[in-house]
Image 1: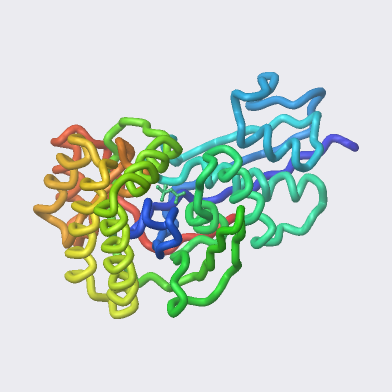
Image 2: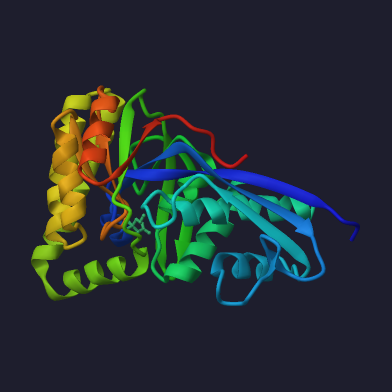
Length: 309
Ligand code: MEV
């Protein structure tokens, strides 16, 4: 092949409601953010990452996708505005954007369902027990709902090892959120495994998962009715339930409490154990100030964003 360069980008996301419960087939809502990961694929002498020879095992997303497409002589360059380990879907955005860049490199269709599938396969391979929420949101952008029969327009259906997820898009009303990153990087896999173990050993944990389900379904209705007050209250309840499941930590709780003073609601977002909180607010500057004062890194995000480009 002649020397060639292609690229693609995909947004990070945050989970508004339903994280962890989604792994058990319950609904969840994710919203894409205006921070992106960009991947460039260019012809090289061997497989490289940002110019350095790719060491198998060190970059599993890249290994997986290059292997899937039979590529052995490309340099993958990654530029990311999404802090890794922050709960903002940096690895899903990497998988989606790399899939699209590779497909362009090989003159294949940049078809969103194919990319969503690739990205989900990658995350599932790496995490062992991922849902297609993060990867679908990075691929399609805007609002994405999983497993909610009534809401939104159907996008695609994912299937893995006998599990099935319906993925739909929803129009999120204009809302302002502030993300507060604790600075603590936490990996999703062990936290998902911890909740799984808890539900296997305790019917109380399964009841919490059911309560999260009810909150998420109600939250979807609040978004449809643009009811920020009620949505905020549901976010607060959801945070309490996630804390009971053992996926919050003192740094997250501190940022939630600090943000709540000027917000409709706030909660951890993503896997927890560190990572970020999200606050729904009309006073983003004040929330940013409070998050900074309590040791977090704030940034303001809007609700609407493109998917993979
Ligand atoms: C991680 O961002 C969200 C979890 O629900 C795991 C998943 O959906 O794959 C914790």
